[in-house]
Length: 234
Image 1 (tube, one colour):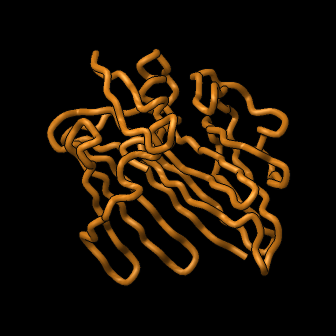
Image 2: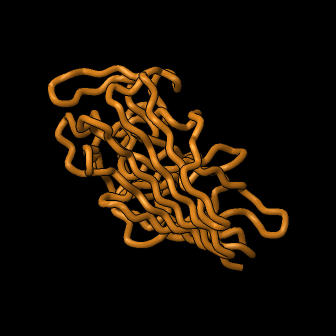
Image 3: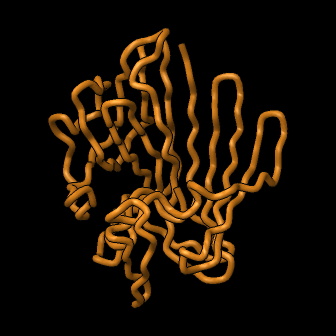
């Protein structure tokens, strides 16, 4: 997801005194950036490492591109993503949108742990900018069964890695960026745990004075980046 993760409310945002509009490909909002359906170019490859790059299309107001690196070992996947500006500075965020099975044939039902002390209050699925301590069904600080949970919520202020435990298999996910955020989405048929640099609608949150949404500025020679390390163990 680049040059923004998740949603931009109604596809509109303000930056540097101007208003910009984006395609509403997730009506009524703009969804998941401009490269999730792009054709990525492989720019480097070894047996265990691949690097890819994709330019932003004309729907994004500024020229730029997203770069990714994946490195796979026997038990670990290391990922890095950058938003790169070609000529002008622009607001940016990035992340990944992985889907996971709720149950494994050789394991059990998933339990999710997100050690975050803050959750965004939502207005029709969009953060208002207000942060609260997660309580009740929103509190994922202990390993939590997903059965019956219907979340589409963003968490921040993490004090450790995210963990998904299927009983016989555990995935540990670290997130490294200046302001780590995690979007948790739990439809009945699967679930998503999305590492990202900022909250959904971060451009508008920042324009309205938010100081914790994680929005950053990409400029020539200054990337907006995120790294994540996934480790599996039985």
